[in-house]
Image (cartoon, helix red, strand yellow):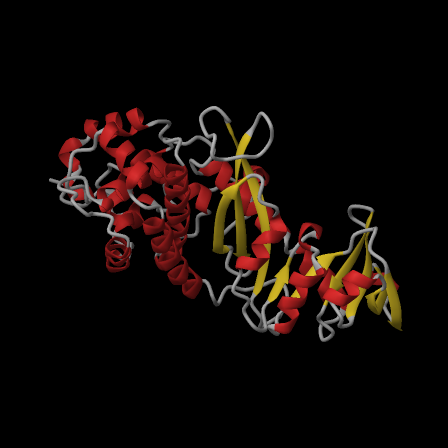
Length: 388
């Protein structure tokens, strides 16, 4: 007789439940709750993420089909779609946001020693946003266009670990640059941002707090050159200059000197102009660092392809944010499991194996044995290069 636990319960045992219960208590998530706890809600939504469920009815039917195994998977109540819908509607999304942050702290510690393409000691962050389109009639609170609704996921990604450290969910009308007001700037860190975040006053705040930024200059921005520095043009560098803003208002909001670097990328046949307040790193490293900003784009594509964040189980703002934060929690949890168990597979492969084996009572290391699952190298280009 096989007495092993299900794969689902073996994955969920990596959850720091003490942190979860702290979050529930902080926001009164189980006030007057008799049966369906916040943990039952989290496990139900995590199951939906791992197995790609399409609706609340789909979640209910799948879990009830395995009702004899639910207790050993951590469930303590019967899962009904109405109960789950009500929980997503009324239980504060910050419960799951705070819990996701606890998982993020664990994952960042685990991946802090990961090798990086550049030999730098500083923490490197990439900041960007992605838009998830919604139906205006179903999500009237998520204002975006006249006939369209949307939410934005503003994400600060740790480039070295591929772990999102900050995620702010807003409606689609919020401009990206406003998110700089909500960031706790880490002294010494390097922030990679695109031209949407080129705001002199906000970038100067990063400079004052002793952090660094690298962004791209807009073609309409005027500068006054103070010094030029020699560059090796065979590397693609065209100029390395010390500049100040020429116009009155930009110079008033950013009175310090900036570094302007022009770089020609032979691969894409494009020219880039970078702005930074870092005068220590070489110009070529600055140019290569900005290329790392693409990691946040890969992160957005990955979670949209492999997590349930494009179709929502509820239409209220609380339900949407709850689903997104639980999806992020599942992403980080799988990354934690991969690192703790030293699994050689990509996150994509791990999710695929879990999706069809969550009810199987197999030791987790045996389930991911390379003798049973081998990655095909010739198909690798179809998958995004996160944690590979």
